[in-house]
Structures are given as C-alpha cells and as structure tokens.
Image (cartoon, rainbow, N blue to C red; front, side, top):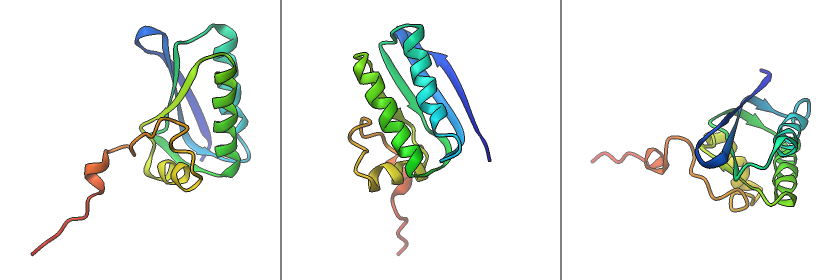
Length: 119
C-alpha cells in the first residue's frame, strides 16, 4: 500500500495532516516535507498529525515523525499526534515516544481495549 497525505485547516489556525497507508523507508520523508511545506507557507498555531488511517509505520517512519516534531519546534509550533491507529499507537508506545506527541489514545478509545469478561 502506498502513502497518501491530506492536509486541512481546522479552527484557530490549526492544520491537520492526515496520512493514509504505510509510512516506511520508501516514503517517510513525505511526512517531514509536508510539515516543512506548511511551515514555509505560514505559521500554524498547531499541527495535528491524524494517524487513524496509518496501517504500518517502521523505524524510519518513526524517525521522520521525530524530525517533523523537531522542525515544527524550531518554528515554535507544537506538533501532536491525534487518533493513532492501534498499530501506530503501539509503535509510539514501544519506542517511548508517546509522551512526546501528546499521549494520544488509540483511535477507537481506551474503552474498546477493555477485555470482555463472561461469568
């Protein structure tokens, strides 16, 4: 599966970046380039990286997210991850980076992760 990236402007100057598909060694640079392009066009109040449609992310993809976070930070813009897919959430948790990106809950909410107990 390839990666597609949509951007949209939300309320109060917040820009949402919505990648869809796999973020891997072949295309991870596109995340960083998208953030760089947004920062070159202007200065959003915040960048939200909506990762609900990310089906896979490898170490190069995680590295690109960190680079995008740092790039935004240099411009004094906060970058957060919102609505991560369960896979993306797990990768951020395993790498210890969940807190860096605002401690987002996995898409679907924590309540859906509770085991069902039958008597």
